[in-house]
Image 1 (cartoon, helix red, strand yellow):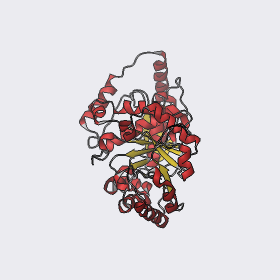
Image 2: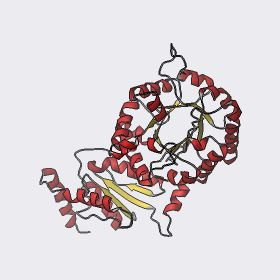
Image 3: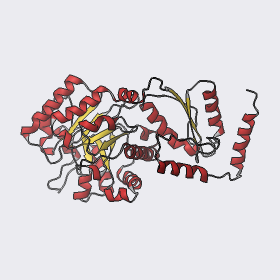
Image 4: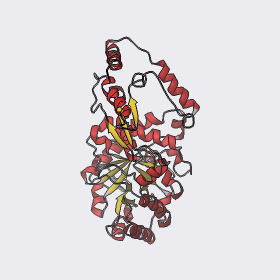
Length: 397
């Protein structure tokens, strides 16, 4: 099974737990589904539970699940019907009782030569049949070693995700191919970086709708590491393989979910004096990053006060947002402030501060070099911003 374990999103969006038995599963193994369904009914984890079985088991798995968990397919053909011996259409999966389907899994792309266009056609067919889609993307070890991981996944999103995708009918699963079945797991920093990048790609592609699509992590997730992975920002789920084949292993992950990921995140940052009210502001240069950071901070349990910009406007200036933020910090309306702009120089008033115990030396140098390379161009918009800051300095406050 592939199992999807989701983060605790804002609003009514729930975590998602699915399953992929891959080419495993006989009728004698339906007892595993029965055991998982019984566990879900007993513990009631705050999540959606889905198990994706081979097509031969879907109808019987639906009976075993008895409405306590969802049953999905592992692939579908883009056509409704036709001369495609051995394939299954999305309508067939729906007719058998499936509610979801995985498309673009790395094994389909690798072993069956599926292209982004083929994956997009399958996703569209699944939506037409009324199925929820889990669309998979991911990079190889060679692509990551070449520094192409982000661009590869961005290109796959652009080519595989059809127009009209909605958060209610779609989840995106990130599969680092080099971690699947190898026992290797990316570092927390690598997962956070990739999921933040995927979120930006979704927002650029889908606008407001892209902010709600659940992003699932898939790559050697098991009971021993699920808790840590699920607590990371923008991790909206986990696509689980081997650990979902046995009810005991799967239930170990479900127990992580039943603990409540939000509670875990609060626990991780509680030191007896933690901040809960944070202000954030940016101009157009930092707008996309502000959207992502705001969502991540809220998922971590912080109360975030947004001082703008509230929509992307290439003509806006950072002082009109950063100044109200600074005043809010000075007057105690918020405990800490996060200021964003294009280069990071203007909004920070020419000072950068990094945590020596938190930022690796190489990343620190990279950030500082970027910071120092920014120059005052003397352009009219920069002169205007400087005047706004100087006017503030002379205010009688």
